[in-house]
Amino acid sequence: MGTRRMSEKYNYSCLKIFEMIALFSSKNPEFSEVIKLFANEDGSLAQKSNVLLNKYMNTLDIFGIKVKKIKHTYYLQKMPFNLNLDEKDLYAVSLIKAAKSIMPSGKSKNAIEGFLNDLSKRYDTDTKDLDKAVDNTRNYDLSFYFKQFEERVAECEQYCQDEKPVEIYFTNHDGDDIRLICEPREIKYGEHIIFFRVYNNLTQRIFDIPIGSIKHVRELSGYIGDKKRCTTVLFKVKDGLAKRYKVRKRESIEQKNPDGSMVIKNSGEDFNELLVRLFKYQENCEILLPKYLRTRLEAMIDKTLKNYVPKKEI
Image (tube, rainbow, N blue to C red; front, top):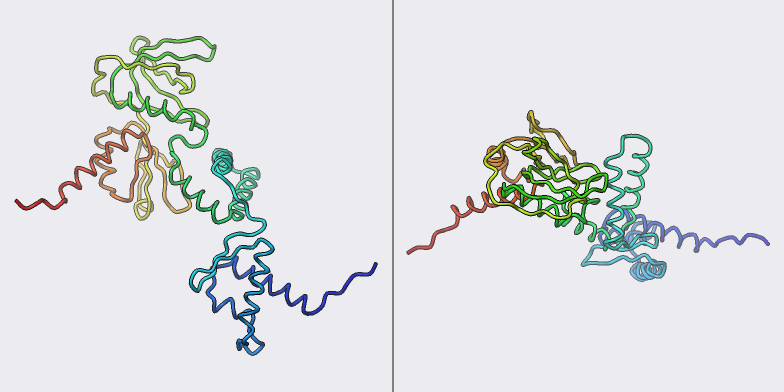
């Protein structure tokens, strides 16, 4: 059976389809740019140009290529090979991103990064919007692995803020149930696990208790006192501050972001001194964790704003 030769008109139609797809994929073109695809050889527009444009737009729609026109601008909404993901799907993608972030540099990490970039390019409009929404509400300190411990982490952070001794019941590595009276120190974040760091006066030891192994915590009466505790604080600096920020003795760069911002890890600095310093950085700084320290800074900001609220005339 011989091959069938395509007519010149058929080839012309295919080329126009591909030219339109290329134009819509590269940017959001104005009507004047799109209609030029159907101009005469001398660049003039014939009366049938609008008819041809509508015909080809209908063809794109039939093949699953959705383009929306708002006023005089065209927006590519969906391609046949676009992906429509729900929140659970994006959560799974987030797990891959988290795994990539802790992998050593090399071919495997580069391959995963390439896969994630290619995947994001195929998101349809709804998925892109959902991904942004999920990103904006995602808790940094719980990341992806730790979402199931959100309530327990919030509870332990509150114990750290209250500065009262606690009684903890937990299961150790051997499967034994342990009762420990101790002083809350901090929430410590590892790569795959969260710990509740506490200090036991009897043994004079620091214990890092996995959050998932804690069965019950009870706050006791009494007050620990104003002792200096080695508490980890994560804060983000951005814009001009990120460019000129000098990492201090007890600090390290935890993460560098594509937008130029950095996540700084601070350990052991006095809370009051740290809050005053971060407050000076204004909108270029944001405390990420612990939450109770973030809340204290928010309270400082609110009190300051009250000084600038116009007073009612008596």
